[in-house]
Amino acid sequence: MKSLKQRLEGLHSDHRRIALGAMRVAFFLLLGKAAGAFKEMAVAYRYGISEAVDAYQFTMVMANWLPITIVGALSVVLIPVLVRTRSEDRSSRARFLGELQGWMIAVGTVLAVLIYAAWPWVLQFAGQGLPAEAQRMSTELTFAFAPAALLTLMTGISAARLRAHERHINTLLDSVPAVVILIWVLLATTVTVHDVGPLLWGTLVGYLIQSVWLLWLASKADGMWGRPRLGFTSHQWPDLVKAAGVMLVGQVAMSCVGPIDQYTAAQLGANANSTLGYASRLLSLLLGVGAASVGRAALPVLADIQSRGDAGRARSTALKWSVLMIAGGAVVTVAGWVLAPWGVEFLFQRGAFTANDTVAVASVLRWGLLQMPFYFGVLILVQLLASQNRYRIMAAIAVANFLFKAVMNVVLAPIMGPEGIMLATSLMYALSYSCYVVVALKPPAAATASR
Image (cartoon, rainbow, N blue to C red; front, side):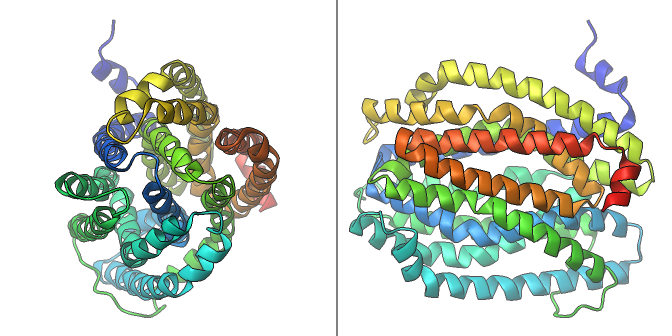
């Protein structure tokens, strides 16, 4: 039997770079997700399935929606640009990084103010199904999540800078807010289920520490801070803005899935949001460690292959990894379906979280597990198309996915409850994978000509 080291040495260098990067990301993700799991255990112990968790889940998803959308769209198009600029002179790179960070600070500040100002309308429209007490708590939590919008944008830029150098420590630091929330909740021994103070301060301080830490690491990786300035003098801007604009359309569509789920769950009555939230966060542990590790490691490698002019190698590499990820996702789905009740009980069933809550969350989780093979498989194909700059096709697929998901929520949620929301997500990822496979199988030369 060959050792893991021998197997890696026998791989093509590009496969080896993805594999090694994926293992590093998976290791960091595992540590980060473990911290997240402990945080969820502490929240479940302290709050159970309650109006406080309804408010926290609703506020987190709705307030983070636009900042995460911007970061998601910009990261996909920014990393290939940063990979190409590594060979440029220092002054050109410093000017671009400074302008990039300057605009992110400006946009983030505007977003923070808008979240504060618009929250009563958000609650009136999207949160109308929440109880009055949950709405009050949600308003209070915006004191943390509004400034977190600015911090999220800065964190996203720093993470992209690190990933462009194939450094993935940002994956571990994703857990910093969870760790701080965990500590705050555990130390607040006198709080009641109606006091969201520990969640508020843990969130705000956690995002701040994460943002500053990543900025320091990114400056070390680039060898410069990139002093913030406003301007569009760098030559990278025209192509970046054009690509980001197209990508933002698709990213906005896909990012609406979270708010739509929160809106749909809110219409189902009390505790539907928190039940869906516990299942979603447990599902994210599996999705993150398994698929995101390969997806995050693959983009800089595929972008580098594309920059060398070897489109065929990039395409074959991505397709092989996609098939491997589909198989891995299927195995995890079967195992997760069997172990779902035990996993929920082990992580959450203590304190205010009862056995009935375990049954409810496990049922929702099982329907969500059906998305895993398709989610695992599609992530690597997303990186392939991003490295090929095929953003229009990606945006069209994202819009189609969103429309399909919205229809499925309307059809399935009234029939199945939160389980229907999860099944709708699984069906959406099945459609997404089918679309990406069709596009990826198209020869690169023909695909380029059709853009």
